[in-house]
Each structure stands twice: as structure tokens, then as C-alpha cells.
Length: 125
Image: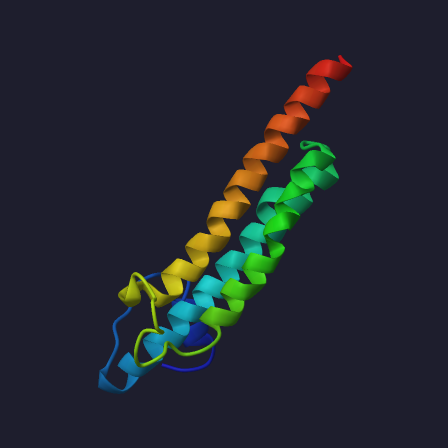
């Protein structure tokens, strides 16, 4: 499996790897994770709702998570190290941890933006 078929399989979640394809699954999984980080950060939760007026500008607080998103993308763009770094907790979940650190800040910033927007709209009414 190569080219568009490999790229498309990243979004299906169903892998039927042959012996030679097993090594590429890590690359496909990392690619899918990068796409999810970018899409969550950009289009789905902020740009479209802000542009349509469904959200107040307070929802732009999610931009505070952008540095962590870039770090998570950087971590997922490189192969996993052969051994855990000194003092690393949760070694088998190398890529997962980078995504969770970003997701935690993104989630709290989004909730803050929703709450601040609701308070602002209630106070303005």
C-alpha cells in the first residue's frame, strides 16, 4: 500500500497490513495525529463558528494552545526514540503524551472562551 491508498487508510482506522507494510503504520498513525491536531485547532472549533457569529471573539482564547500544538506536531513528526529520555513518565505513550498536553490547554481555553462569551452576551443584554 502506498501513495493515496496509504493516506486514505489513515482516516479509516482499519489496517490490513502485510509484512512489508507493518513498518509504515507508525508513520500513518503519526500523520493522522498531526491532521487531527491541526483541524481541531483551526477549522472545526474556532474559525468557522467565529466567522459565522456563533461564537464571540472570546473563543479565540484557544490560540493560547497554539505553541503546544506546534510542539505536539513537532514530536509526532519525528520517529519515537529507541529509549525513554531521562525522567520521562509514561514511556510507551510517547506521542500520546504530547497530544494530551496540547489538548488539555486547548480544552480549558475553549471552555474559558465559551464561558466568557456567554457572560459578555448576558451582560450586554
